[in-house]
Image (cartoon, rainbow, N blue to C red; front, top):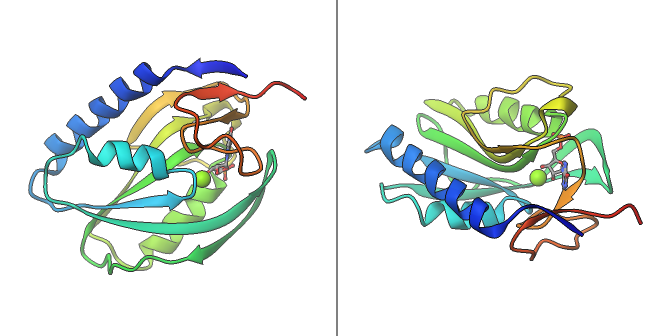
Length: 169
Ligand code: IMP
Ligand code: MG
């Protein structure tokens, strides 16, 4: 395992994004929606850097088989909150081809939120197939497969405190 982004750098970046959200949302009482499972750690840390009123919800999707995106996305666990007329921040672990988040955005838009933006810890811009507007991005990374800090390879490595690149084995 090679460390790509170390724990301290993740923390600093998460604080920075939290500060931005504090400033930009003020009293808008946003709903932060975490996309499970990958975003759980980022969302948990991010929330603790935000000190304005907010609500949290989760969405569970199934889209990924091993190392390649299938492009087929299914919501396996839906929101419990009504997002109509609310300011929504979709929190993702990583945007790769962009297919998953586009699908989710399309779905959420039908529920008529007042605003809808994307916050992703990681973005692999060179891998994009579908264009996605990202309002908050932690790190732009090369098109390599990464694990840790919530991200998995076949459900392993989510518990790492850093983002690492898996050796080709
Ligand atoms: P996309 O639909 O190609 O943008 O893929 C997005 C989803 O694939 C993410 O939410 C992750 O769950 C997964 N994914 C993409 N790249 C990686 C990676 O490098 N490591 C772990 N999961 C990834
Ligand atoms: Mg994900």
